[in-house]
Length: 359
Image 1 (cartoon, rainbow, N blue to C red):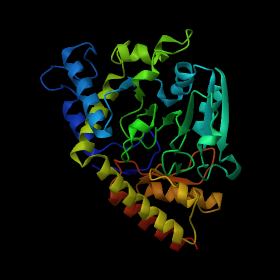
Image 2 (cartoon, one colour):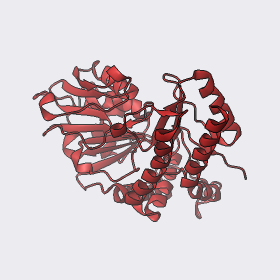
Image 3 (cartoon, helix red, strand yellow):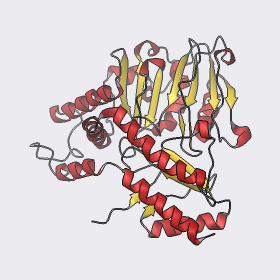
Image 4 (cartoon, rainbow, N blue to C red):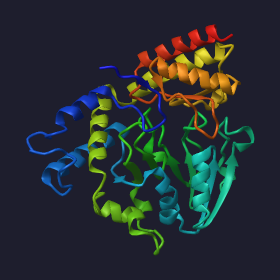
């Protein structure tokens, strides 16, 4: 078997142990006589799967009892509309635009009410996280929305932003389960699962119970958090197989030390690349030091043709999906939980050799 080191930003690599378990259980799950992909989501067997998945996710994230966990569809992008439709009681919300996806969320929210951008880093091509203070938040805003980790630009909030007593909503698609998070500091956390938790098709929402039940009357039923919570994420057929894989990933993370261990591993991986980049004469990191992401390391050579050459040679050497997002170019190494330290070390060695040969 020749598996490559997959640095894709999403869908991304999954832990090998998880894939091997899924492979063994593909045709028949336990003694059910069928695959998880074939069984009814209303069956006792699947009911046990989704309940165990939620229990392990709650344990991994240390989610309090007064928060609901929802397993939904539509990607994080659907939540750009679901959040204002559920939470805009006064019709006002404040947004921090620190990258492309937070910009899309802001644009979507403006369709449903008075959404205001209170801070942005667009002035420097989203290379840093803007400072947020409570006095920047409108007194009558229903919530403040942030994208916690910016996949395209390789930046992350260094700490939970201080928004005073306002409800904080966070898109954590590309950093969820990468390190411990104090869930109680957020009203809503949502994430597309295809980066750090599961295959594409699943979106996870963590929501404080008191924030449900205030949705607009004309909200689509499928976007109403209370409807989904009241039906245990099964108002309709959920993304069954993706939920099953997420359950295996959560179990793998718990067996490997939980989020404290994930953070330690991820810091080591990120430091290997950033240390190399900071001392390189060819490659340059694009994110400012105090805003750097552990999950998505973005860098350039300053020469588009050389960037292209690097990506081609890297792919031929078994380091795939290093090309940066089409909107910014350059390179991006996404090093989610499943990426082993050995993969990052090997990439750093390859980059050093490439630099030596392309002076």
